[in-house]
Structure formats: C-alpha cells, structure tokens
Figure (spheres, rainbow, N blue to C red):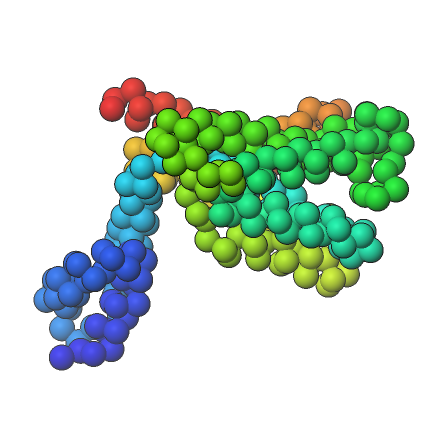
Length: 297
C-alpha cells in the first residue's frame, strides 16, 4: 500500500471540516487510493484542486446551518473586519501612552468576536465620537492625537461604519432575544467568531515595528494582493453556498475605502483608480451574484 500517497491525501482532506472528515473521510481516502495511478507518490494537480475546492464549498455551505440570517451574519462579519483592519493600522505609540484607549479597543474587539453587540455598540460609538473631535470641534483631541485634519472624513469613516453596524445588530438582536424570551444584557446572540481575529491588530502593530512605513510599495502591493484574493474567495463563496452574507461583509469593508476615494478623487492616479475599480467590481459582482441566487431561491 502506498502510505506516502495516502498521507498526502489525508493532508489535503484537512480542507474539509472536522465533522465532515469524521463521517466521510475514510470513504474519500478509499476512493482516491483506488483511482490513483500505480506508483504515484503525490496527488495530481487536478485532484489537489478538486479536493481544495470541495473543502471550501463544504465549509461555506456549513455556515447556512447556523440559523443566523445572512444579512445579520454578513453585517457582523463586515464590522469585525473593518474594526480589525482599522486597529491594525493605528500608530502604536499613542495607544501605549494612553492605555485606557488600548483597553477599550481590546474590549471592543473581544465583544465583536464574541458577538456581544450590546457591549460593542456603545464602545464603537465612543471610538467614533472620540476620533471625530477634530471635525466636530475643529481641533485635535489631546488624548487621541491620531485623528483627521479638519474636514477630512476618510480616517473616521471606519469608526462610524463599525458603530452604525454594531448599533443595528444590537437593536436587532435585542429584539430577537425579547421575542424568544432569551434576552441577555450583553446580547450574546450573534455567532462567535474565531479568536484568531484578535491577532490581526497585533500583527499590524508588529509590522509597524519593522520601521518600514505602511505606505511603502511592498505593503501597498501586499495589501492589494490580499484584498483581491479575499474578494475572489467572497465571490466563490457566494456562488458555492448560494448565500449573500459574504458579499454584504465585503461591501461593508469597502465602504470606508470609497469614502477615502471620494475625498481624494482629484489626487488619485491611474494606479489608484485601477485598484479601487478592481475592488469595487469584485464586490459588485458578489452582490449581483447574491441577488440572483436569492431570486432563484
């Protein structure tokens, strides 16, 4: 028996959820081993792509069994992504000097990850108002001197997106809890996300310590590449699961970027327009696909 080939098949099967592997894993391994070429020591490219695509499809379709409405799940995921990316880009020093804001940011991220929207909503609102003082009063706040210049809305847009989404989810979930008789003051009725989301801000701050400015080409190109790949996966997930939650999450993520583009339209070069055009096209394609899937359903 070719144990090397079997081991490599088993590694590829990790693309599938654990429960699925427990139920169907041995059957899949048996089928793959019977169909393998004599003497083969590694899966073919076609088999590899097929298994990876199959695992991806099973994982995204499993989210439909959570019982959470797609728009609620998508809005929550979008708010979490915007918060994680925003905190990852914040300058490290001001938050080290003022640890109270660091603590509040950590609590907000934990609340979003755990789905405690009635905790996250007021914290997100405080963060949005605090970073908007330069616009509201016309000067920089002495506590958070990382805010925008007067009249510059792009840096504060992510905070308001998270605050608005959290408020909608807090009200919606509180109402759902009262209807079911299971209301809890912290509103723990949203799906719990992976704690790995908490690593995103930490990784962003660690990258800042490399002394390479975040606007350097290497970071700009890397981020653009990650965004394009992620949005392609969103489109694939929308088509595979026939569900629009990932399309909505992508649209929420893109919204602060479109505010930035609108404010810097005249200063945006050809590459900038190409970058935002690609992201927008992928998000629109996902939303259209989600709408068509919903209409067919």
